[in-house]
Image (cartoon, rainbow, N blue to C red; front, side):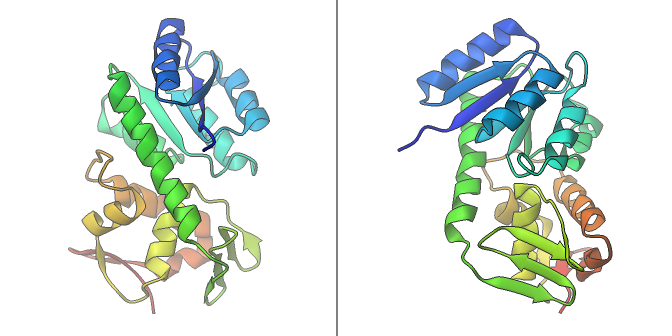
Length: 229
């Protein structure tokens, strides 16, 4: 079985060495960069299976790195875990809004980080293996499950892996109301520790990217969300 490739973007050399050592013991292939610019360049060049990006980086910070990765077609769907010394909910929400799939607050144990990486990769692999060539069409919105492409009015919409899972799950069950807890299970997985607003943040970001097609996702106050019939 091919080993998963992890790119670490962090300016703390000691931390990078510690994380690299432990991830290699877990069977991962690891590369690293010590600043945002070189980290973004490495991601585009290497196309790793997952990226760990520190929030505070010299040059461009981790949030801008995340935003640029999501804007680049070659890296748009690579899962990203943000590493942050900031524990404030607002900092986590900003990271999620910009497309991060998960976050880990420093200090963290290498075992916890490895578990988070495996959980994110497991969800990504499961999504890839369960999709087929089936296409869902709702008005001017088209979701190609096999190619993992989303189009609105003929325009391709770049989504993160989490956003695609969330949209696919809702669109595949039109009219059904899902609670936030159910959507966390479907799009994020219970292995991930989440904050109350996580799904709200992802839905808001998804609607914004979809533009006019975002109207298909309806809020059911007091319950959760549904995809309009």
